[in-house]
Image 1: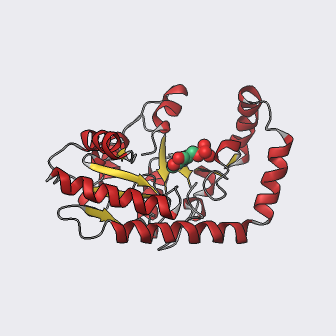
Image 2: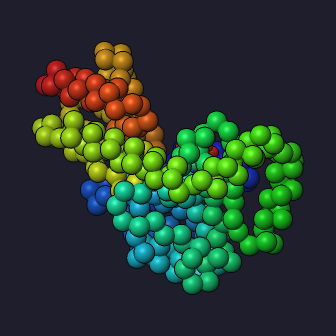
Length: 266
Ligand SMILES: Cc1ncc(COP(=O)(O)O)c(C=O)c1O
């Protein structure tokens, strides 16, 4: 899961129970596992689709499983859909759109990914009015307000959304293909083709190094920075996460260095 959830939830007094995912099954949501994770004190499910770090887009069946459990156990769903505009394969569906779910779902998103406006801190939460009234108060207490020029930029970004987002999607799709091609065929290393987002997961469990050691040695030796995906949860231990937020040239060069670094390990 995206790393800041834990601190955010704890700051609100909640504790966190992680849903176990199966790396070898593509990190999909399993309804039975989720059902077993829900206990008497569970209040909400945090759902992130498209997912960081896995790049998985939840299918209708996966969302139905979450929705069924939310309805049966009277849970809120906090749906983080920040990568929803960057889908390459499959279709992003909002769980809030499923039967009866709008009343128990808070959908959060921002301009950080779709418009690369990360530093501008412009985002939103959509939910039932009864709840969003509290958000207004919380926002007043935390930030008071967002600078006017950022609000103006956000209005412009959303008004011209279709063209801007199509361009972003095309760029990330091209980089996804580039990374996939550059890293194809490395013995014992599997690249999980992301359905969405700006990251690719690489399975290095068969290499003679831990993912953490690998990431640091790679950086020290080649100046290529990747992330040990084990930091996102036990399910992704032994995987690396590569962000394709650099230019095509730099990405290609990074991949070449990665490939020759792995050859050197052997
Ligand atoms: C799943 C997920 N949610 C939220 C965020 C943060 O978005 P924002 O910049 O809008 O706070 C990120 C950023 O990496 C993310 O990956």
